[in-house]
Amino acid sequence: MAKVYFLRRKSTLALRQRKVALRRQLTVPPQSIRASVVERFGTCGKPNCACHQGAKHGPYYYLTQCLAKGHVQKFLLKSPANQQAARQATTAFNEFYVGLEELSQINTELLRRGEGLEGSHR
Ligand SMILES: [Zn+2]
Image (cartoon, rainbow, N blue to C red):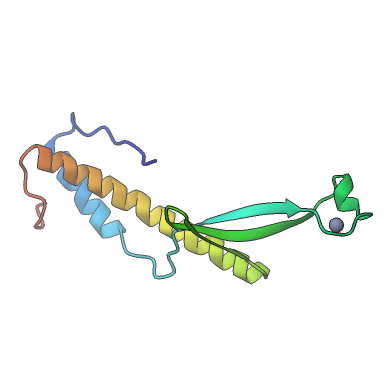
């Protein structure tokens, strides 16, 4: 769910100024991945292993990515470097997306007011 920005009481000038700032700040991080890194612990097939008494194996880190309903891509992130890259890529995506969402809500409010959405109003 997106953060809701309460924009109706802001002046059009304030919205346009925020938009200019966002456009300056928002650059697509080239490493972006829209996904989650999840931590899992598990049990193995050996009947006498301590993992069956609560000392589970792990943590294991997986990247999970929902592509469409019923289409989830999931795989094990094997090395610490792989895990680090995945965390960095998903964080970069999320940060970019937060800014894009705010820009979207500002544009929606400008549209509601019958204001133009394009151009470089200052
Ligand atoms: Zn085990």
